Image (tube, rainbow over all chains, first blue to last red; front, side, top):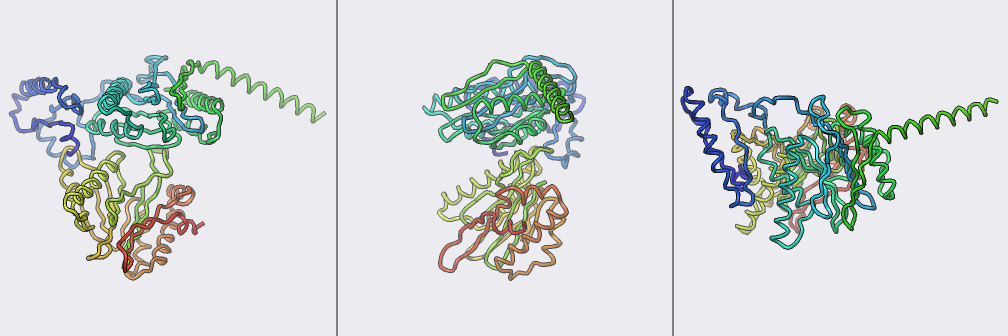
Length: 304
Length: 212
């Protein structure tokens, strides 16, 4: 396709006929050949090392699957179930952008790491929150940082956030339909104002006022949509973000542990110290019991 | 679910699209624009798979603009529609087909107004009225019943209003999209004034909000 040409992604005609008994050896040879050519990464800035798509599917079954559903991934089976357990959110208000995320990395039912950094700064006025596969997100964040920095060095000006999102979206496009799973939210400030843009490996690119991604996102949306308005103060916005992540981690099993909060304004991003949501939970219990006590007191006063 | 509708009149084409960008059950955006301006005379409406829509529509858009730069004159709507269909067909049997459904609306000095229906299988049909999405099942019969080739602008908007009302009635998902959100329907229209060249006239949300 057109983008493949621009990205110099040459699909080797390995789907051609070759005798089945020799399948194993040919596959190995072609694999090595592919790896060798992909080493030369320095020539074209857009040339990214494309992982070799498994050509082990027999020629016959590939032909008959021509009218498969679009973007049906011709990839190997996953060794374990991937789950995109996270809650990340970003929203804009008069004081800039707030980006918040939980810190749990889950692998199926296991909490693989309770203290992950899901929000990464790209440059002084842009951070990205990540969701999806942790490894993929780490890689693509680094690629994005590299490309933005290269652009800045080459053209002596910084890419706008919309342009960064478009660049990321176009870089991810060749991997659509494979198992690459990244859902990044770029949160930043530029002279046009605060912006939050969601970019996904499916190809979606959405600019919005409130974006929340991950398995806990519906719970976060519930809190955010109710409480958010443009005129919030910085402290109110931060406590709203914290509340949203807390509610999501309370209900969603795959989100939890701590919350990371970033605030981005005209001066740049500021990271708040990581907060344990356990404390928030006990504060909430405290508030509830206090309210119950006061209500009981009021009721007894009214009845007497 | 996304919805597109187009109605062709004697000297205009009326097109409308819903404004929701959804990701499974979550509506991520309520003011998402699905119309792509290919030129002063041609509008492309594109729905379908998440990344494919924007990628494909922008690809067509840039190519149409490139044609104008290279040749000094614009592609006609019919030529643009056939170009779009050719691209869809070429990618259909590749490893990366585009799963997009399109409506292309345009006005030509020589051919007059034209509405072209295209779907992800690279079919192309010039039609007096067309619709995409689940909402099409509900509204095509209304269009069949009330459409006339000589509809005036107001009558066409009234026909569109009937369709929207039916969708609100029978298709709860679209209710939120079409009426409740402020921009509501983005309605775009082409016309040729006798003296002047063709232009795109965008309604606010007034005609559609009369439904409320």
